[in-house]
Image (cartoon, rainbow, N blue to C red; front, side, top):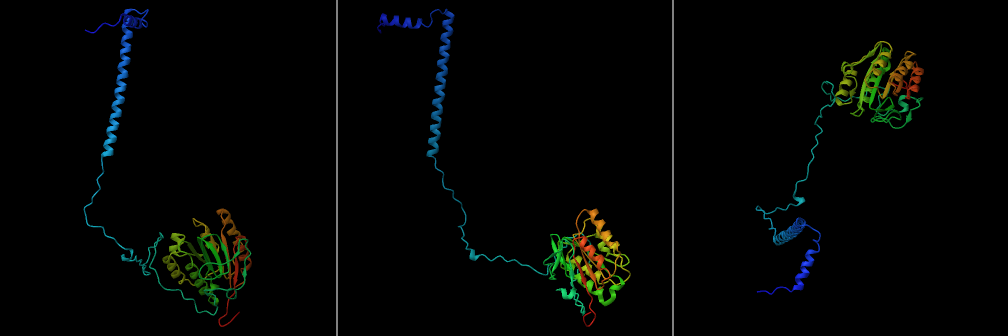
Length: 344
């Protein structure tokens, strides 16, 4: 049998156990003992959880370290190596015979492939390279008139207008996106083949427009003369189809009547979008109220419009045409006539 602890040891334990419970009732001693046991149990559970977590992490790390990813094997034919030199070169085929669709919304007629020959006139006014010797002196009274190159196909030397595409009419250039032509076809235009020359230059001018530009042709004599397809559709895109239709219509015009441009001016300024540049040609004396008429329209629009004027063969309208160009930052040009067989 084990020997009993010394009496001194028993006394020490009894004194240690009794020290914290001094002054406690039996029920208090029981509660204190229970709290101690609960604390010990929670401590054991925490230590056990920590130990299990460490063991689990170690096992996972060992498995990952020991595992090996096998190489992927793809069954199939061996790889084929190609040299760039073995590939056929890329070929771009562009056919000039392909006709692109016309993006304009207008109903159009057949496209003509005819060219517009320059009339064999001694006047030389339909030259593709107009010069001062051909067209006569230039007056540029407008504030905005500038010296510089003009539209393609003419080599003109005087121009006006805003940014955009460009063209010229009897040596006067303009830049913009909407171009209006107000051209005299009165009876006096029959003299010296003036109408033939004016129509030829007008066809050349619209043909020089970029395809994104728009144009409107308003002829006048006793009143305005507008092509039906133009009157129905307003501004026409400068597509090959629209240019061809307009040229065909111009070829049917004959000189007749008087010189009254106000109705043609009204039509141009009542279009939904105002023009950027107007080319105004006449060989006669026009109503003196024409400058004021144009000025009122420009004021209503609240937008600047460049108006270039051409006096053709006759000095009758020089003063009024100069006033129109000066008031609208345009260019006035006088184009003298040439008698058949020689100079004037």
